[in-house]
Structure formats: C-alpha cells, structure tokens
Length: 497
Image 1 (cartoon, helix red, strand yellow):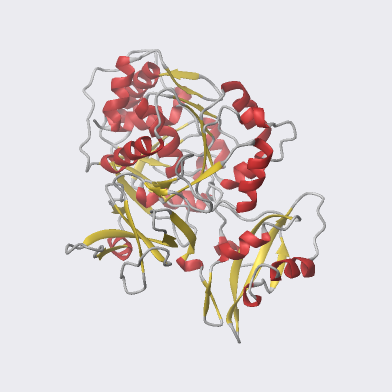
Image 2: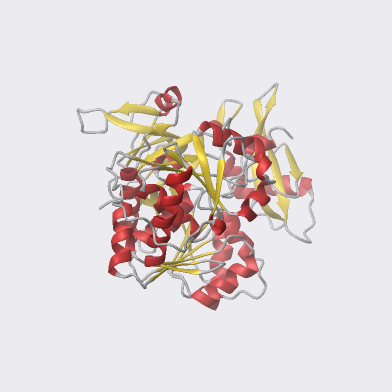
C-alpha cells in the first residue's frame, strides 16, 4: 500500500488516535486527513503546475499539506526557509512551482513576501476557509514510480540540486527502517528536525504516520525547552543531529531520569564525535546510536540499534539496501578495505531535477563479487569501509580528503582528536595549499565557555595522537562554525576564511 493509502486507511481505522502534537495544537489521524482534503481543494483552485511548494515550520501542518498535494497527484517541494533569499529564490524558480503553502509568520521570518519571486501565489493556512467539508473526491493513489517530492540539497558545494524521490523510493525506505529498528504504533517519536530535510521528512514524519504512532514536534531547537518536552511526553524514539545532542548537555537541570523513556536515540546528518558519544552516555546514561544516509537514498541506508551496533560504526544496511566499497577503478574491495561507498536499492533517487548530466555522474555500474550481472549503483562521494559482519564505518568525504606529501588524510581523523581536548567544543579541519607538501591541515575550533585556549598546547596535544604531518598547521578560534540547517559543517565557507 502506498504511503498516502496507508495514512488515509489509518484515519478511517483509528480516527481518534493522536497523530501529532506540536507547539500549537493536536492532530488526530482523522483531523490530518480531513484537513488534507480541505487543503487539496484550495490547492486545485490556486495552482496550475504539478509542483507545489511547502514552506512550513516543523509541526502538524507539514504532513497535512504533504498529503493534500499527494491527494491531487501533485509533487511536493519542501522549501528550506533557513537559506539566503538568493538561494531560496533559485529553488523556487528551478523547481517550477507556482504556489507555496505557508503561514504568515514564516513569510515574515524569511524577510517578507518581497523575497518570493513574482508570480508565485502564497496560500496562507491560517486564512483558508475550512468551514465547509471538502468536495468529495477519490485520491490520486500513486504508482511506485510516480514522483512524490523534490528535495533540494543544502548547497554545500555549488547551487542546490533538486533530488527527485518517488513514492516507491520513500515507501521502501520507510518500511525498511520500520523492519530494521522494530518500530511499532506504540512508539512515541520526538522531533525537532526540519521537515524540509530528508531526515526530518522520512524518519520523523512518514515513519510515524505509516505505523500509526504519535510524534511530538517543536519548531525551534531551544535546549531547555527540548528537555521539558521530553519530561512531559516521555518519547521512545528520539532523532537529532550531533550538535543538538551536544547542546542538550548544557542544560544544567537535565538528568538521566529525564531521558529514561528513550529506547532509541539516533544521530544522523553529520559524523558523531566520539567525545560527545561518551559524555552523553556518562551524563544521561543514554547511548546515542549513529545512522547514515543521503538525500539521494531517501535517506536512510544504515541504522545502529541497541542489539546491533559497534563503536564508531553507523550500523548495518537496511533490508533491501546493498552497499559496497570500491577503488578508483570501480572494483569492489574486500572487508576492511577503504574506498568510496556505493549503494543500490529501491531507495535510490530518480535523479536530479533537470540535470541529467549530473545524474549520470553519480550513477555507475559495478560487478558485485560472485555475480556475472552488472549492478547500477549510486556513488555517495563518502569514503569508508565495511567489516566482515557488514558494519559500515565512514572515514570522510572523498572531496574533503587532504593529500599531504602524497598521503591521504581525512579531516574527521584530526577532528576526533581535537574534540577530545578539554577546551574544545567542536572543530572542523580543511586543507590549505602548501608549496612543499601540496596541502597542510588547518583547524577551526569552537571553545567551551570559560575555557582557556593555547594554540601551541593544542598542537602539542595533537602530536600525542597523530602523525606529525596530520597535526594542524594553524588552529583558529571561531565563535561559531558555519553549519547547514541539519548541523552539517559547511567547510566551503571555512575555506574562504
């Protein structure tokens, strides 16, 4: 059954069950469905194109609007309201939408309606007439290959790319995640991740609705408020990015008891520093389990669970997902050999919107061991290794790899050491050109409040754990590392420093 069909079926089967609790109100499954049909009527009147923009804060209005678009057979384009006006305007024009579903505070947040390109109609949810029951209609139940969403990447390298995900892509990833982590309708999810991002869309919007569970949303990440909501609602599943977990450590009133209901605390979107893992475990008696995925893979490919995890690993592949590590010639490598990670499965995107050449660059054919048939795979651009039991370890981004005197060095290795220093809160390492060695590592660090920083002492600390050529040439203190909305460090900006 399609995602749309299963959610509407749930609304008929258990109409009174609470689906969403957000900062403003509660939504039962019936209310989500009825609201979606009402909104579908309004979209049909306003929009002439097949693509519909969604610009909404994290909450119940997002899934309602998503369902409305799907009921009409339209493609949803979630919009990242945290981008600059120029980037946002580019996405709106590139995605070929003519209507955006939003709320007035959101438009004010981005800088006013003048930021929106001319000719785009805004449907404000708080101003729609919902007094009449919607016109009866039969939903446009999608086929697996029908396009469901276009998700734009955060643009860490060049202009944002529109990732096309079908209904089949999303459904396969949702179902594989549910099976892998043994999720049930009795689980309560807690979410603060933006729903315009693939992590927030799949893991904290579609998964809970698919199994008929309850999800708690809050639109703004305020650490003290997050702890209060966890105390109040006692969630079973928590998903966040590493920087969010790190911020929760600063809440002085938080205790291990506050997190005692959490069965799975999942981290994704950015590598989890080992120092953060250990500190969170010691302070709250809660093990953060790392996962892995990309927008192009719908997004989840690997997920550590309590009974299937290894230190520093992002876990094993989800059911139906096949992953390999290849060398520069495209040959599949054996266990524990490092190379580029490639992935195959029903979760792989349909391509980049209006960019067939770019799509072709990230797809290739390999020959898996023991098979005579070629397999089409997606090139992640991430480097890693897979051990004998199938556990994946991420070692860095291929494009971020430094070549120092002919040696390959990944920033993450240096960052892990820097983050163990008591004065350092977080770090990012990039390469700077060097006439003798090709490149040298340069570090940017955030300092813990009240800590004393001594660059020479930090470099001396690094020498205890790293080869000399890996020790940062410079260590620069910054007030805040530049990050994407999901916490990913934007190294491209640091390179301009």
